[in-house]
Length: 131
Image 1 (tube, rainbow, N blue to C red):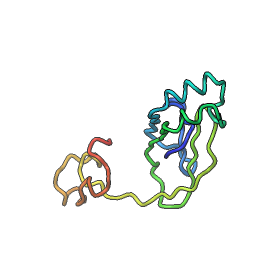
Image 2: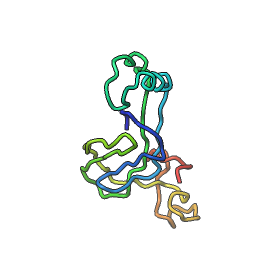
Image 3: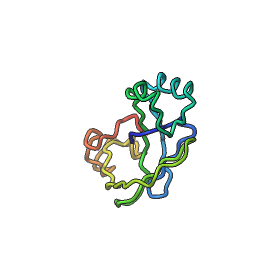
Image 4: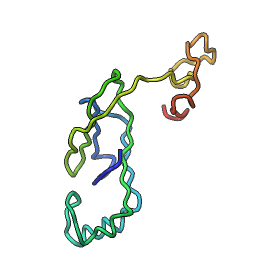
């Protein structure tokens, strides 16, 4: 999710369809000059600060999260942090895909007939280190 103003991992909550998302990570890139300007000009992080606009154009703010285990549906996503809350934004939950390997399922067998898993992690976009 891109946007802003975002804050920190510890004060950021994402809810999908009213269910709290896990593994929330906030990424702010090239924002330090913007942050200093906003502080020096006594501007609100949520408001428009004309004095700092040119310093803030390079700031990229993103939030990453794991979607809760919900049935496929069209729902909403809401982000809350120290600055307040976003409006409820439209969000589509897609059906989960087979993750392919035992380290995603808790099964210690490599035998696909035993586990019922036939795909590979690269089919789903899930990395082997995600769990």
